[in-house]
Amino acid sequence: MANIIKNISELLLAIRDKGVGEIEPFLKIKHGSTIGDMYEGLTKDIAEKSIFDGLDLRVVSGKITNSDGVFSDQIDCMIVTGVGEKIPFTEDYVYPINNVVMVIEVKKKLHSSEMSDGYDNLQSVIRTQANDYRQLKGNSIKDAFRSIAKKPLNDLNDITGLDYQEQMLYHTLVIEDLLPVRVIFGYSGFAKENTLRTKFIEYLTQHLSTSDNPKYGYGPTSFPNLIVAGDYSLIKTNGMPYSIHTDGVKGFCWMASYRHNPILLLLELLWTRLNYQYNLPPEFFGDELINESLAPLLSIHAMDDYKGWEYTEITYSDSDLTSIDSEEKEWQPTILNEDEYIVMNKLCEGKTFTVDELSKMISSEENAKAIIEKLSWSHLIYVENGIIKLLTKECKCAIVPHFGFVAADDYDGRLMNWIMKKMKEIRKNHQI
Image (cartoon, rainbow, N blue to C red; front, side, top):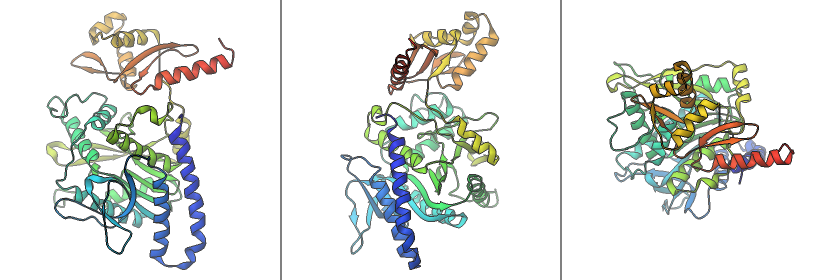
């Protein structure tokens, strides 16, 4: 099932393009409601082909409600579980907030005004969450925290050992996990990726809070998980599943842009949520991963005394955005030198040692510092109170011909599948 998400996303992209082609001759009707219905119908068709059989999932339109009787605005497309309440004499349904997996606000064209309308519509979904809190399973929060903070979150009920920024990240991830995945999906829109990036920043700037004029609904959890304008997208990098680390930027990277098939991102968001909700086996998602060439856009940093969030824009030129595509490549484990391999192998064997002990082990404080920096950046280790520990769930080391020493988190079997694939390639080429 290698590359299953990539292959299905390409199929759904073709369905999108074919559907838009079928709609275009009818745009002469000049009736906004009818045109909207056509695009919403196409979106539902794409969504229905994105979900799994046997999970009691449905694709509907209608409204979301909570136990207090609060309703959301009209929802163009939502992926839900179970049976909802049909609204009489319509094709719409009402669903409780905790039965909603994903919400999609559909736009024929996405420009600044449509982005604002879509954002407001999705805010109505957030308002219906209110006090209707489902039980957290916690695995998605732990995995997201690990990927962003580069340290484990061992106990959801005790975060006293975290610093202030990490505690604020934890609270944010809890809300992210409670809310449905929220998408603004525009079938066309901004002509350039940089224009989409700029207009989103401008929108946030227009709603900045001040001490004299606080504005609510524009914190990190309020951002849509995905904003699509034709072939360009903005994706929330909240570790569910994407996360990015950038040098020289304060805080955590929280939004990024992408310039290729947006349905690939939509599927990653949806299937990641379903994976945690239904405990789907990791093997279902295939044995390979393409590292999408995301361009960081915005970082978040919690202000002191719970006064809100500070945002930092990360800028790229058009040529820089294009060059990022060269970074999109097939997943592979971390390639290690001999000293790095020795360190990882000892940790995988259950041994622990301090930073000072590592310096003595390899007879160089400078080399020890470089090893820690590389292995930390690769999400293999972290340092806590001077002690080097594994960050992974199930770390494995190996020696592979033509690659040498390698290590990776093999909780999903990806490392072993990668090794088997490379060995087949080597045998096929008669290299061993």
